[in-house]
Length: 312
Image 1 (spheres, rainbow, N blue to C red):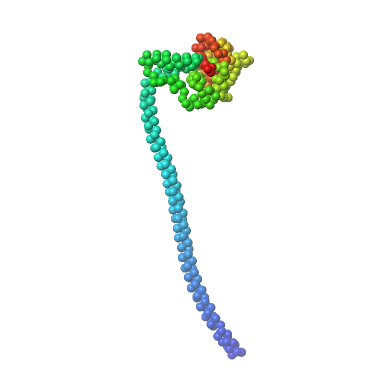
Image 2: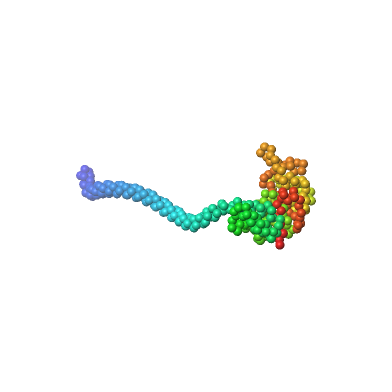
């Protein structure tokens, strides 16, 4: 048995020994390959880390590039705007120079021009075109010059009282575009006394309704409770149009016409009839008559500005 076993062992060992050697060789090859793999993996990790850092640096550089391009665009835009501004100011410089010369010249004539315009607002409104021009263009201009008061060459009260923008506004509100209508509108806008519109053709009243829009209360002295409506408007700072007046006004309006306002503390009051009411400085009062040739008492004419809206 022992011999048989030794024989079998030898027979098997002869076959197995090369296999075992092959296994050892393969294991050694595997260990060497794993070592090379680990070394390669380490290099890959290092390269990936470097790549990650390079990508980060690239993104930062790209952001800086985009930011620089945006700043360049903004600077270019600002440069273009500055160039346009400089070009515009270059042309404005000429206009400003002319304006300075004009203002320097106007400094000598502003008093005379304002006196002429003040007289125009106060006195010529009741007259027609011919009488208006006779007063301010011939008589008043000559009188100012004779007194040594300088006025502008070709001085026109409308140059002081209005301008193209305000004229356009009045026309858009429904006022006719002729010279007399624009004069009337300028007088209404500049007068300190309550205006009475001689307006049988209803041109002025149509303009006032559009001018004041929703801030206008329209009453007639023949209506009931007109005094209450007027009082509420005075207190709330609204505008009131009294239509179709005759040659006389209700005596109750005397304190309103004369603006007999008094103070109690910081509040202004006005006596209306038998009642004292608060007075709002925003209150405005307009009168309109359909009479073509009304005759008002001196006390009414002195407290109101009469304006003739009759179209000729």
